[in-house]
Length: 531
Image 1 (cartoon, rainbow, N blue to C red):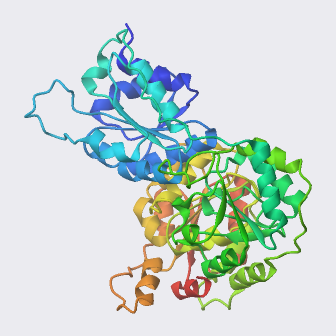
Image 2 (cartoon, rainbow, N blue to C red; image 1 turned 60 degrees about the vertical axis):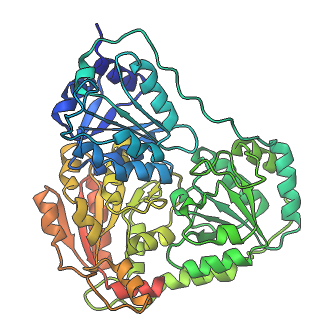
Image 3 (cartoon, rainbow, N blue to C red; image 1 turned 180 degrees about the vertical axis):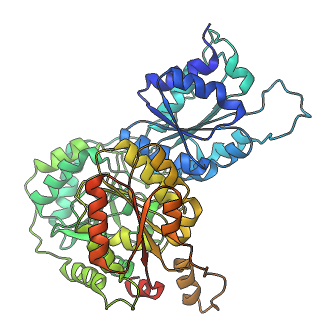
């Protein structure tokens, strides 16, 4: 007879999933063993939150549900960060954890948490796996993760249930709410054509809800019509950010004042897959937007009066229309101000000017390289100024904006795209939260470059503290030697404030397909000149 654990593992393997990320516990050992038998690798990581983040990025790049597995109690409790991140950042993540068996007496409260109640608000589907429902529930959970907008599902499996033979009954899937009305691609294309005909400064703003699979169509339409374009951070790379029509990255990155002024200067904002989950200000409610959405935004939100429209047919229809007008670089002054700000002054002695860091790294990494960032001042820097050129090559936590994302995301990205160089750009604050995962990367054969921007503070919050005229208080910390941490995990490390030395070291590591940690001293006050 097939056990419930074996059926769970088979459902995961049948979905084409090759890796499950997580940490073990006595209550999930049977499931881990069944995954092994089914040919699914268990990627052992150092913390459940890191495992969940890595799984979500891996899954989205593989166009399948990422899977994270933990034990009950504290292991399951550590899933809040990745589940919340998957919910707000539209990343497909199936979380599996153990739970106390239902047949245990009510007085058995050791490690017992109301996990379903806790995670239901941030998950698209929550259920317990039983011998009677296993085949339907596991498959439905994976499908739910991949329904747009992507998100998370959470399942529990008790140690006793895992051993029981599978029954015949199936639990019917939870029905989805009625679908939103959908528009006609040709009609929508004609409406947009007419709107553009009257516009002097149209601006296409591409957001998280745009499918990168349509990037080629988008590029052809923008070129054919000569339209300027901006993006939000989570979709960076869907257009070539070195092209003349690229205006910048909106939603709170560096130079945000310039980009907000550009948005206000536009007389036609075209929100192509734009999701306000990435926007930390209110311009998306204050400025009129011509919404073009093919799926609801996070929270199943659709702007009032908006019909959902499939972007592929819409872009095909737009390509069939003659360009309604000609626009001669209508955002030129904003583009120039944005790029000029990166040049900045000379660096403080012993530190590297942040703009030089970007230029140095971009000079040696190919367009297909994947960049992940943590959260902090460096996120604002890379989010605005890293010159992404290809889809799915830039990853940050933005809807949630949770620290400790960068390293974990880099592991998931490298396993999903093993032949592509991966760079994790992290601050010294975030690096200290999960630097131990460098050992994980070495152990599982996922080498990548880590650049640690060392300003010895939670600089983004420190700048905010100063901006509010508050006394500088408890934002600084003593330096932690990132090079020694790297070496302790079996990774080579350097520290340098020389852009040329950094570029040479990174290029060498990429050529040799080796990991490298580069500590780069930064004067936190230099960020003020960028923001």
